[in-house]
Image: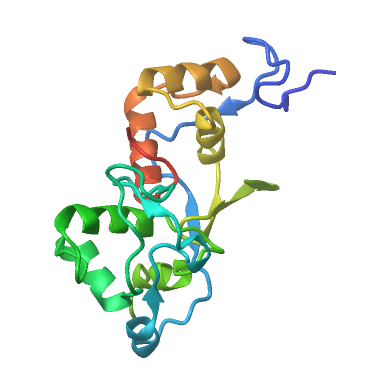
Length: 135
Length: 76
């Protein structure tokens, strides 16, 4: 019995039993995206804050690429004195204006940290909300 | 990535979004997993694993551009 459902990368042999794959020269990828259920009222977004870094890592410094590094690491910046307001982060992301109270290099490091926030880290929900279209 | 019959669910941690995708998206993502590649290398990987009905670099580039827009792949 021939098997034309050979899993990719598992015993697949050229010309024998490999699954056909269409890259789709004539069409776009079929993708349906489901956004997380986040608070999306204008008031909620404007009132949320993003700490840099997460309070649990307040002792770490932020490298220019947004990585958290040990305190005192050369070229890295200490934690922001206070969380950034969502509106300020949004403005910085959209226009490149420095985050309040920061130099351009510091703002860039903080912004890179924010861009790399993941679910479970303080500020992630606020940051994700900034990227949701309104209405 | 979680297979769901004809579709695959892909959870993107950075955005918190879940994408339901169809071929060739999960295959492309799997071919790139842990091993960044140029367009030609990626095409060769896919050709090695699958019978490509349309082994067109431009088609693959178009798919990658879409995935980049979604944030599922990153150009280096």
